[in-house]
Length: 546
Ligand code: GLN
Image 1 (spheres, rainbow, N blue to C red):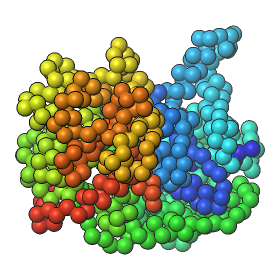
Image 2: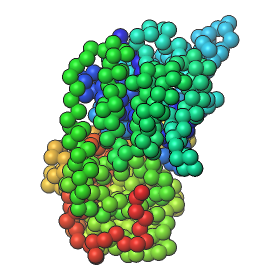
Image 3: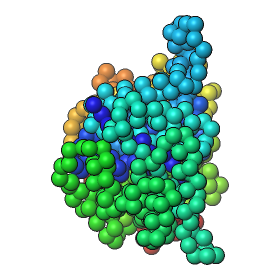
Image 4: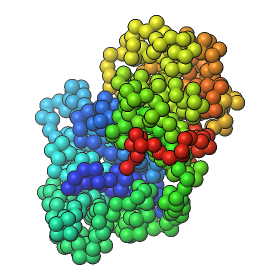
């Protein structure tokens, strides 16, 4: 039977609970303990697919086509496993399921209540993942912060689990923030005490408290938390802010978290091997020559909107022993300020995924700049559609080619709705989602990168390349380097007379792993790193990544 670790958050959100959970997974996996991970999101949306990136950051797509929280991307990268739809549970899913059952008559005669009906539905999701994944340990992150109204049914279900599956099979870890007061120059524990009290009110006594802080945590502070929150002294684990997220598993291991979890859950202790992580962190921290990449998008103010893209670029840069010098370029700025001022120093240009017309013309300008100046270009989903629009405008000598997403009346709809999308009115979960096969054309950049002929990649889009334009664009120099096995869908395209202008209709960023970069990202950086740009310095108008 599986054991469960519930991870709750206290004091404030955004303290890195997702990375902490992913790191606990890494630590257990390094002891040859099989793990799976689940994220509970208390919002009422069924999934984040309908939310703006400004609300939610990136939507992470699993191989089986679920639109999920970006934390799942961190789980996948940290435990090096492909998760499924069962790994993201929202209140929206839970309530829809309970209400559907009620309509079906499953509870005839009964009054449907949060306890037990909603909590039972939630617990079923815990055990379903345990059964499906066959993991020894299921780590469950409760989204939000303890005390949030909408998170309460999840916490109540987590509490009930201890009784359901036995005390030795459930562990509660609370991740909090210790704020620092500049006036008194000290780290404060009171908010942590309050959030633990809040947890206790629900009936959960944490076994382990992980204390996030920007400042060192003294022994005295640890003693205080141990005393007031009633946890073992060694179960108060400090987690200071670090330069790279990949260091977190090492820090937690150093503080004895792995041993503690194994002991408390009575898991069979196996030898731990974190040598690959140590090597990874050593290499990340080593200074390298930079590779200057411009990411041209519409949500660049919110870096989380492109979380996996950024990670995949980092993995690829590290592979080539380069430091990623990533410049976030607002595509609308390219519309106003011209391209040269903002792209002058870029050794490579990435146009990532996105929806809606805002900023599209700026992205088209970036593609045009890349094509005309032989700058490596990598288009991801929308980035491919933009590359096709730009190339069609050039090849057809017209400014009118467009996607029908942005101009429904264009005489040259080079990107159009997928046939199966026509007639779909419901927005949620109705895109082309998840893994689809793609046949590669030998000799192309794409085929060279993958080194194989058939690949499966994750999708999330409604629009696609319009086959009516295949011949005419091919004659002008476009190569269709990847097609669906029936030949009907263009999955990858590139330009014949360009060093590396490659785009895909899918999202390769979701499959990249530290230490194992995605082949397309790897080759994009491989070519970009050798491009010589003016001054080889980041120019001023670009916003340097913090
Ligand atoms: N908006 C485009 C489509 O729906 C691209 C989607 C994306 O980049 N994920 O096809």
